[in-house]
Amino acid sequence: MGGLLVTLKVRYFGQLQNEAGCSGETLETQATNVAELWRELAARHGFTLEAKLIKAAQDDEFCDWEAPLASAEVVFMPPVAGG
Amino acid sequence: MEERTLQRLYYDRQLRVPGWGPHGQEILAHSTVLVVGVGGLGCPVLAALVRSGVGRLIFCDPDTVEASNLPRQSLFSVADVGLSKVQAAALVLAGSNPWIDLEPVAERVTAANVRALVEQADLVVDGSDNFSTKFLLHDACRSAGKPFVMASLYQWEAQVNSFDFRRSEPGCWRCLYQVAPEDGCVGVCAQVGVVGALAGLAGNFQALTALRLLLGLETATGCSTWVVNALDPSPRRLKWKPDPACACARGKGDWRWLEALTATSLREQAPWNLVAPVDRQVVIDLREPQEILPHEWAWFEAIGSRVIHARWSQWHASQPNWDPSTTYLLVCAHGLRSLAAVRTLPPSIRGLSLTGGIAELKDMIEGRT
Ligand SMILES: [Zn+2]
Image (tube, rainbow over all chains, first blue to last red; front, top):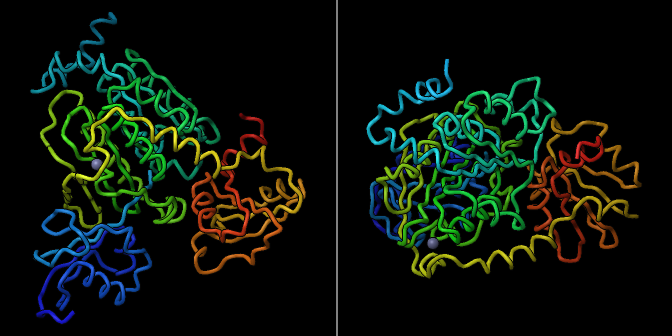
């Protein structure tokens, strides 16, 4: 942590939406990469899914956890299996 | 009316559609599609493909119709409760288009039969409800070079993926998920719930994708997932790049993974007749209270097993006091949660998952299989 304060949108899918109590939010963060942002949000919302299950996307493309925060919106999506 | 006239009139409106026409109808008539799972997704997929005139449909599901299926599984009626899903579906589908071949298969798709099923098809549609089946089908389609259309549901949300493994370029689901998530890790429909109308949306989305792929009209390239949340219904298309380290980069046609898988999955899953009756066996029922019928525990008690209740939704927070001298048989509705739970047991504890769950056991006890 310790980067500049940036404003970005976060979008949640699946179980994350239930746990966050919303489909998305706009927030200010000092996180510099996706993993830091995830840890911050997981602590705030008490996410119970392990990070290794979640996929993150920026600009509608899945990215690494170490990817720098470079887009205006970050999507977090767990896999689902119902049929 | 003469049968030939009737058949021409049947397809009239779609024959007029650009990109479809008599040529497209002919392609469909000579196509075979495998649909795995006749549930919330499989029902609308089958209904659409049958009426589109796909010449041969093979559809697999080992389950019987349950009352809780009816709000989303549109091929079944209240009178079908307790009947084989594939048999009930075949009756309805035969009435909606008598000019195609229907092949109901009342079996679970496993490592043992997946290759034979997939190799018969020109395209495979996944309507299963668990990660192991989805990954098994995906990997088999990749090895066989067949297009694959997959979807999954969660409450108000659907994810749809398609892969055209006829094409030579790399890119697959394993590029995104190297390892399949464990079954039960994000809940199953019986626990988290699902909205019926969403299943119709996702199933028809799959059917349209399948038709595009069969008719050669697919324009989307590269790997992507469509995500739709009906509470906020603007669909999103999330893309990913092929992973150069993934097996898909080394070409197709390799089935060695399947032999390895057959060996491991047999060890983890216990057929009921190998486990019961066993002295000092404790049955752990992982279902939610509303899923459990009182007489079901009596089946286990009758062979001398003690039953304890430890619901899967609270499994990580509270587990039974383990006794290393006991054998534990973990059970749930269909064997998905129990298989996931077996994988979390301490190494010193002997635990087995009841394959097919209470549903299959019930069929055996009541003499249906
Ligand atoms: Zn791949």
